[in-house]
Image 1 (cartoon, rainbow, N blue to C red):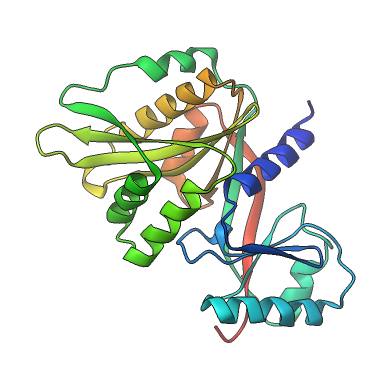
Image 2: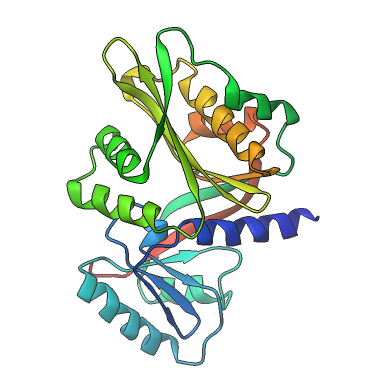
Length: 259
């Protein structure tokens, strides 16, 4: 499979894994309006040309976001249709933000499968988390409001792609020092919401967590890894490179003016 095909399939897998209940199809636009934190679940993905004039589509989508009480974002990727949409929105005063990289591991290292059974480091334990528990754990680490935690729990519980969530817990006080999840669709494993407590960073917890999540995914048949990470998050990108990931493509968001 070519690198271009792998990247396109990873984009499809990422769209599926981020699917919220709150979405509708609008003339070639996949309009998502989940009230959670993740922009990928509350943005527009322009996946087809459509028939309406751009300003008419914008007006229709703006009504959806106004009713939902959310700002309006359009996600711009190499697969955005039409290719001129980024420039068209920029000309209308839409701001660019959140420069992000999709990273791919075209062939996950075979030895990672053994990480699924590797013991936790001394003084720690691995906990599997249900959707609601994971949303609360990651929300606590990030300082997210209750509304976003509830929205994420609902999205994960209703996801068409199954997630497995893990937390590395310190036995002395029960504190979660790192948590994350993996979504598996066919041979694709997507890492999501990998986060370490600030005081516990630099101790190898995130790398250990990613290896275990990928090992679990390989046990379910996954052979290709993908993830999304902010371009300026250099420590995280270094961890992912050591696991065999490399940049596949970039995307960013356009935000409607006056928000």
